[in-house]
Image 1 (tube, protein in one colour):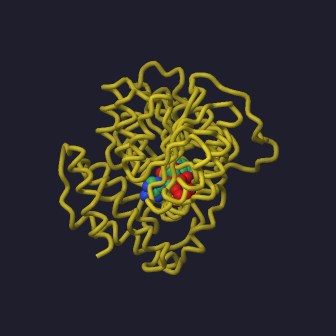
Image 2 (cartoon, helix red, strand yellow):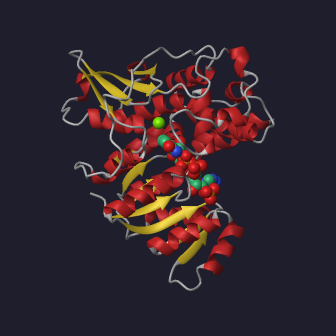
Length: 379
Ligand code: NDP
Ligand code: MG
């Protein structure tokens, strides 16, 4: 069980919910990191008394240092700060809740220190899944999923003694705000439309990913790595109600699922308490009032990102790293109003056609693929 956390991305949607769970479970907090939200992290630092606070933005770090000068808290900046937070002696668990592939190096270093990783930052597994899982095996570090679908699968796998008995994983997908729209209709969708998710309240990047279905594509790749299965054994179904969080189908045809209200605090809490469960004050699912549960096939012609992700998963090498970085850059361009909604998939495809895939990549190859793909996606 987790006793003390280092929380990377404390001011985000997952970060704030993690601190609610930490408060509830009475966990210690050794480090908090954010990019530039000084007001919120100052409040968090005053409540949780970490030994280290990191602002990756240098100007924000300078401001925070002044504001926290009455407390015995170290303030650091940049990637150096993130790496220090990920490897602090006093934390047994590192929560990776930063957004994007910036989470990769801190996650690898935390694994080398044998920390329990409560992993929300899916981009890390998408761009370097083989390296990350191999490092976790080599150092005996546990990776506990925070992503709700992967937590549901993890929960449905408890008691499975032989992974070859798993026939397939079925990831559920809400379909996002644009479910049922045609490719032509999607052309006109703006950031304001995309940021209205029907069931979950999340950061801007993942909310746009949920609208393009790239989020589900990233999750297919995340599941392959976490559960060591080929992409052919990871399926996706649209389930508008977000109540069945995902399923495992075993070879005898049994399907085991985890159900609940759409609330990230459950998977966050389970990542800390596994292999045990703690009592929760949160609202429970009421089967009698939750309404009908529906399941449909995804439309991968209108939502091309899901298809692109499956193809990259088959290609292997640095293909997923290229796709992920191009997507990060394209989503930011979409949020700034520079490109249209369907341009996100076009930019990703363009980057994939221009950046060469390397096989059996080193960490340096992955970081270089990430850099080149970001450039290719905006030029
Ligand atoms: P948010 O955008 O809400 O939060 C991101 C956090 O990362 C903030 O603390 C932010 O700091 C920090 N950050 C932003 N840019 C950088 C950077 N360049 N370097 C270091 N830190 C940075 O994201 P979410 O909480 O929604 O998502 C976090 C991760 O969890 C993502 O990988 C997402 O895919 C995954 N996830 C999220 C879910 C959700 O429900 N939100 C569900 C499942 C997975 P600041 O606030 O100062 O900008
Ligand atoms: Mg998810």
